[in-house]
Image: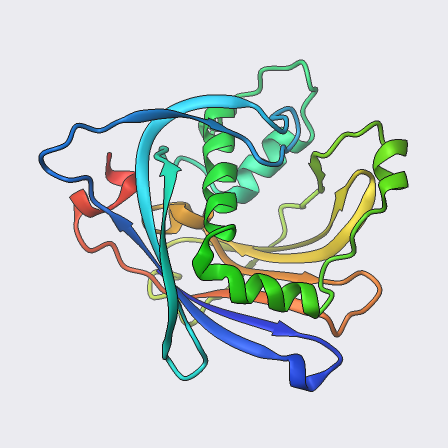
Length: 253
């Protein structure tokens, strides 16, 4: 999967563009598939921060390039393998509005706690990789995310789950996506909150989570905008994606 990433602010000199390639690595033929324990870094709905789960181990190679296509850095992250049976929008809608004591499973999408936990952990693992470090620094410098204060967190009872209410959105066309005519894409906009305080305004275009799109939960376009500074934004767009062979993707296992 090839991503185009752009960070913008009200200071033109700070605007930057990168390309990031995500590649799943097949397990070595002479080694059995291992399982390990993972913990959810940041909860959604009744999937709480710190929730533990076990899953087979997979590996993702991240390669970051500058705007001219020059390689900057790369890294490999160990992530949980999971079945791509729902998009990020499906997961969020199902679990974000659920009762914390309710064991929610959607019959139509097959959404489970394990699916949510694995996807959140995978996205967080890729976002914290060494390869993405220049982009993380640029997002901080551009002041894209409004940080809640310590007082905000205390007044919210130390709850650190992300909060959002994405709507079903509207069907949109994705001219750069070759299979767009066969699978619907939906665009939705909503604020994202932490500890009851708005972090950023979000816009997403989401399609089915079929491999290799499962790596980002079917997200094809993600845009985060500072709630008070609309010029400060992060845009991530899927430019290309291809499943090379059945045994070379996490989703095939």
